[in-house]
Amino acid sequence: MIRVLICDDQDVVREGLRTILSTVAGIEVVALAEDGARAVELFERHKPDMVLMDLNMPGVNGIQATRQIRAKHPDARVLALTTYDADEWVFDAIRAGAAGYLLKDTPRADLIKAIEGTVNGQTFVDPGVAGKLLTHVAGKTVVHDTTVAADLSPRERDVLSHLARGLNNGEIAERLFLSEGTVRNYVSSILAKLGVADRTQAVVIALRHGLAGE
Image 1 (cartoon, helix red, strand yellow):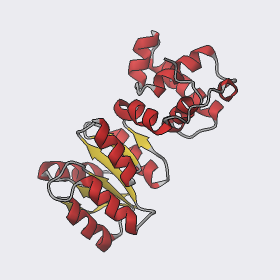
Image 2 (tube, rainbow, N blue to C red):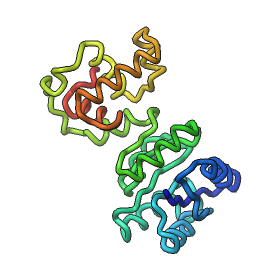
Image 3 (cartoon, rainbow, N blue to C red):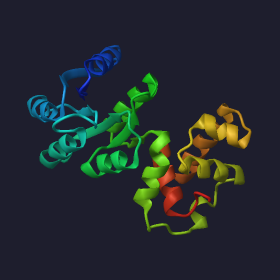
Image 4 (cartoon, helix red, strand yellow):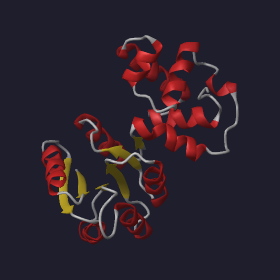
């Protein structure tokens, strides 16, 4: 059972998330927090498996709360869930120790997948902010190395390049004049050939080895 603490300063959001997660087998919402200070307090009380953390809150915001929780509990899993995709929010959340960053309009199925994956050590970043975040993280560590993707076909390289720019499957399909199902197949093949478990790891490889294109 995955025990979740939800932190958001809006009642409707907290209750909405609780309602969504209450229908999912294997997930239990153990507490709701209206601000960062309350989230820190309730984390100590309940020791949840993960926290869904809003960022822009009065008083102790989500970034500060994430930093406080992670300082005392380095293994804590915090998934930032916010309406903001501005650079400073993304970078600050990750620097504070968030394990992932999703926007509040994330589809239900993707949210559940992110919760389950985050608890298991995976990293989930909304496609809309993945490019800017991972480019920032990669920084000056880019090492051009074509051997990393030697097994990829030219079309798979095209798809990987678009993934690295933060595009989702539908957007890639539109850019490359492919069906979305075909793009999904290419993504699955790319992950297998690169030996990674998810899109984010594939994008990190692309950015660090100069495979992201122009």
